[in-house]
Length: 108
Image 1 (cartoon, rainbow, N blue to C red):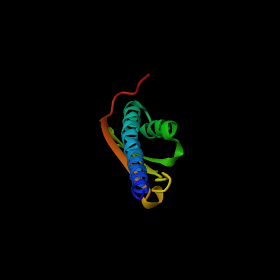
Image 2: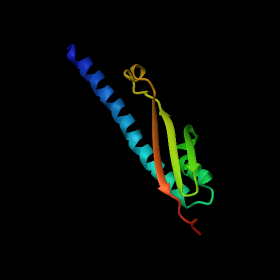
Image 3: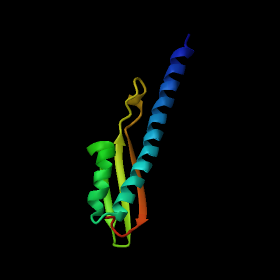
Image 4: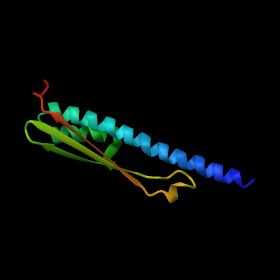
């Protein structure tokens, strides 16, 4: 009888960790898309911001560093830990991803 609540709490904690890991993988993909767009755009900052806004909305922070030869895109987002029961025991997690690509001639 006592083990059922513990098993439920453990399963919910695993679900919370899985959500965070899934978002981490998603942020890697979004960063790659933003960096690729920035590497071929005349305005890398605008291109990267547009891609991130389209994919995750306005709740992500995008930093772009363009030295003319390389473009580096950093995307940071805070993920709420809101799984029922266990979410309040986990602090919100900030996920950050960074990618540097060689600049290419603008498309079109």
